[in-house]
Length: 200
Image 1 (cartoon, rainbow, N blue to C red):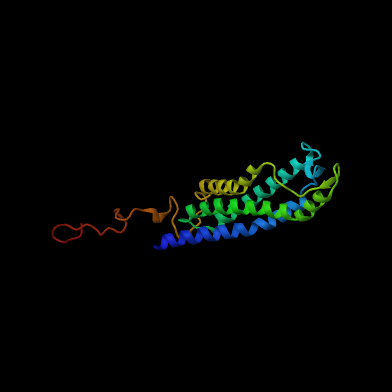
Image 2: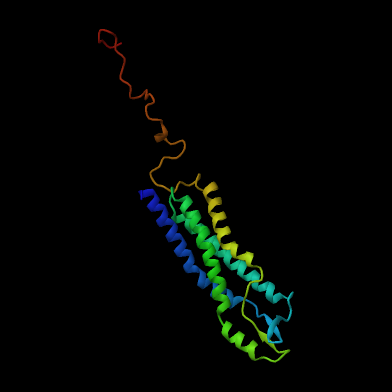
């Protein structure tokens, strides 16, 4: 495998792994800040006590804010630490790693206390109200993390790279080193002589 391909694969793997590591902590944060959602047990099955109340909606909104914030962080860090020639690998890593991290955040936050909740539902008589665990009703929110990360990286790549070069030693536009090789340098050209070799 050629060196550029190896470098791209390594960049993709590292980006994915670092983002996946952030998934469970984000899930713990989501579980901690999510509002309590109450369910009414009827026939051994739980039903939301207030389906359109602030509880279920607030749970989704908090997950969206946490994952969108994580996406902004990941996109910014990837841009600052990533060098040129790694753009495609970084974008793919942000997309795949962000999707995996969002899924892990959801499952982590949802599974905390899930066994106790199921046990309470199983033994509750009809009409009993139990407190549930955080869950997503709009699973499309899982795309927020990768989309925001990729979008921010793209915006920074378009509007910042042209102003602040990230690779030291590369001449920018308008610098003296930008003279095309092979052009005539009038200052270093030797003085003209006539056919007899005498100075003009």
